[in-house]
Image 1 (cartoon, helix red, strand yellow):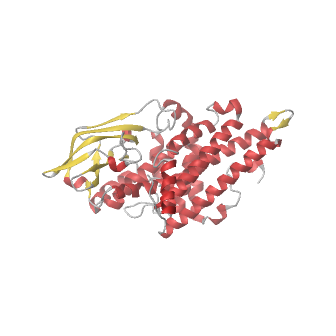
Image 2: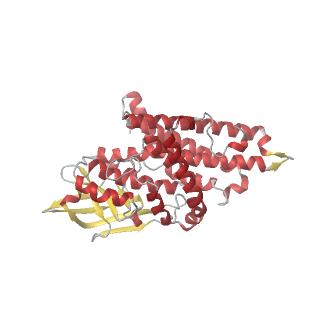
Image 3: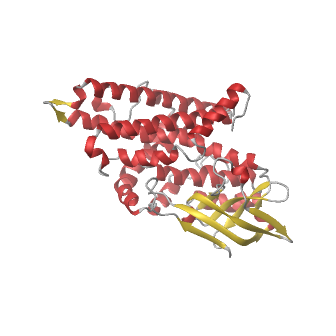
Length: 389
């Protein structure tokens, strides 16, 4: 692989293992990102707004809930889903986060824990982008311990009454429904809460220095009353919420590779054209060492993601496998972005280059849906048999 062929790094030719449908999915989403998302993402990042004009086309391409089956959903295989996440995050983590929350958190919650009536009503609307959803689990004092939530749901007659608040909620201020996790007298359950319900309020969080092209919100529920049948009946405790997060974390394992590959590609172009001491930077030993180390890490991440996809398709993927993938690939992606930013010199801080935007975004992805340390402790517990949280 010469430096002029680094646009989509695939050093061990993993693409040769993809079948025809998977290659078509990858190309379709890559073309969409290149033609429709890339040209507007910098302005969206500057404006701290999600590019909502892309939602309908994402829906038209079958991106939303792409790996879910039935109810008119695409039912793609798990590697195809991973490739979609990678191509979206090659543009921006905010784009992948939107699709991930809509599909792997909101739609999956209904698909896994809802009634047939709920599935038939909501899944087609969410898949075609007519309805936008958010996933209300995290609270300001919860963080890495979501079971410590204070939001409550009390059954009064034939209505649930919800009180509490949620924080760091992707899509919150543009959502039509929220999947809200709350404590009942028996256990933690999930509820479908239309955001226009009296007593429900969302406030978009501003001033972020990361994930600026993504909507992040606080949710407040003050005596929010919903019908009894708006509870997801099969949701049963915090393990149900965590099973949703595992779906999204699998997508992150693939997605961050797109950001890493984007940074690597950009810096490869840069060092081949930047002349210093009468020679291209690409001729320098230090530059070649950095490129080699980054390519090695990216390749390892690609192999890991592909293997997790195989296990998920087989139905043998364990949540500790997902922790391994999320932790490893987020760490390598953030490291890659930081090294590339350094190699770009002063140009690296300008938003005409992608790398610092990716780097800032990855600081969040490194932390959300299980911090790097928490996923290491998940693995540590599996290795030793002793939970050390």
